[in-house]
Image (cartoon, rainbow, N blue to C red; front, top):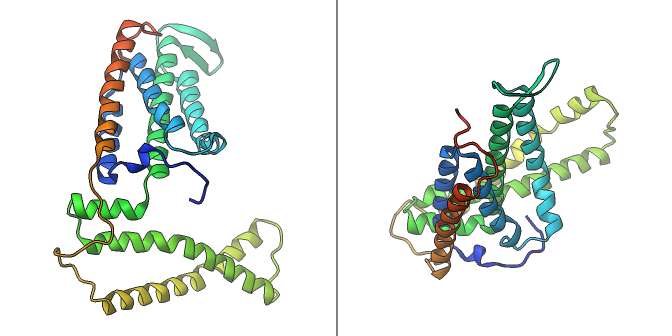
Length: 263
């Protein structure tokens, strides 16, 4: 993603450690059923997302827009049509209860946490460094790591080839008409040339890797050395302290008089 950004401490964290930590937090967020704790936990994740990714705020808001839509759609659906006994508002099929309100807010916060953690990881981690870290720290076999890196590298190339094919069609006089049928017809003409180009490129990459004596041997050197640093301790310490603080605040200063949204 080619956007202007400032390099923050979050970019210097070991990618494998960051992946492992965020995966653990994903699972941890699923186990949270306390609404007040979920809200404060969302705030701890949002601090990293807004202030530590190094992206301009207009880009951050742009990234967040589809996930805000997911937040409102999931929360509102649960609030308006959820089940409960304490009725707050009822009109036709719309039945808002106190229980559905709490569950809707909880579900929306959980969706927002997943989105912000995922975007934070993508914005602060380079794919090449991630796979080098997986090979060096988690002993991922090089044949799998380099296969993933080659696949990621091919994505922008495929978009360029797609644009080249469309330009070639325009040069040959292929006219695109308005309407769904013409759109489907134009899309059907793209996969075969795009697939053939991709096969040729993959074949050339395979030949180049064989020419450079690439093999699956575990004993190999790496151009990039990915190591642990003090920023990794800062990353772990941030979540330990912030989650502990979030839990204490949720218990001592609850916004809503409910402990478990499942009850």
